[in-house]
Length: 262
Image 1 (cartoon, helix red, strand yellow):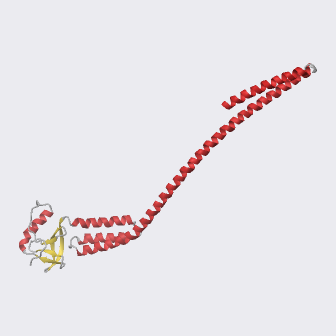
Image 2 (cartoon, rainbow, N blue to C red; image 1 turned 135 degrees about the vertical axis):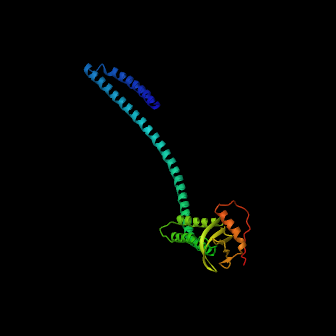
Image 3 (cartoon, rainbow, N blue to C red; image 1 turned 90 degrees about the vertical axis):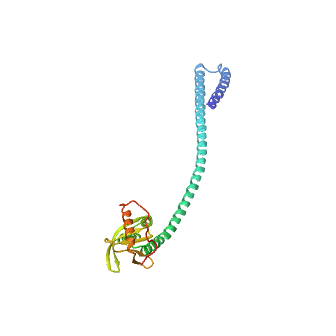
């Protein structure tokens, strides 16, 4: 706007100068020029001056427009430069993220390559442990091992699910060591197959008692055989079975844990 005012003032001064010179020139030619011709010259001069003023105004407007465009282009240039710097920062960050993702992917692949053999080895150890453990709930435990084996051998089952199922099996087996339980089973004794009640005390001991109370004994884990106990233990084992079934208040009992007596 300031530029436009300056141009108008300048053009006004030029117009006054031109007009003064025109008057001086006119005073010399008036005496020699006819009135009609003089009138025409004056009108032509005025039109010329008006056209010049219009051209000057148009140039002033164009100059102002160009200056504004230059300022806009400079502003755009600064913004583009700033955006270039920002995007370079973004690119660096994205490259860092990609490198981290690649590192994690490689680490995951290494874990996968080591995890699957680890799961299979753990299953073998669990299976051996169950076979060497006290012989309680044989069908249930073997069924669980079979189900787990099928899962580990399933090509379409992902490692997370395989790991989950193995951990569940380990958790169940670990829980047996913290509980007492009564179950019914048929076991091989010296007098043949006998239906008995089994009393499991965690993984510490496994006792048996026949329904008539005539046969009482425990499992010898070293010999992997059922061995009889003196008939005097029948009453304590019977009480322990009632406690396991929650039919009797827990009390201290004298059970032959850790020994098999003839």
